[in-house]
Length: 147
Image (cartoon, rainbow, N blue to C red; front, side, top):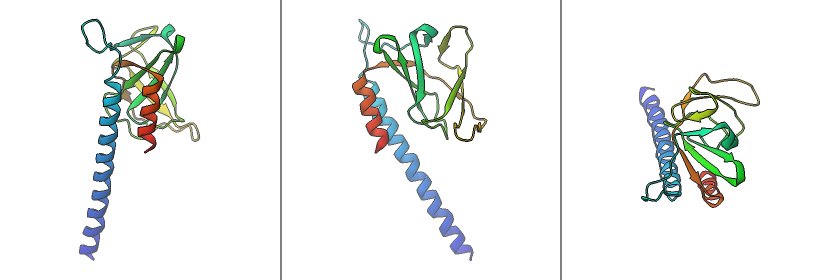
């Protein structure tokens, strides 16, 4: 009986390890896609720590680590959260508590509610930097996430 219990426990460990490896692989692929973003005159990535309220119209989760911000004049940004935010889904309602008025910045706190149940898991996640991306990059990221 103990041997069977240990075997079942080991099997579940292998599945979760595989899932972690798949998630890390997806994040590496997405990181590579995002790294091709625009650069400044010195060749450094044109990252932004904050987006002013008037710069973006909406934002939504792509997965448990990446948010897509849609801005004026077709501008797009990907925000890679500081850590993986378990249970964050595409249809979640997102709320961000900001430290400064009229802008959303790196390290501001994200809460989310599941639209169907309006249940908040009570988890908070911190925003990362905002990186400008193209529509083609967003399409590539979505393709990686569908795999």
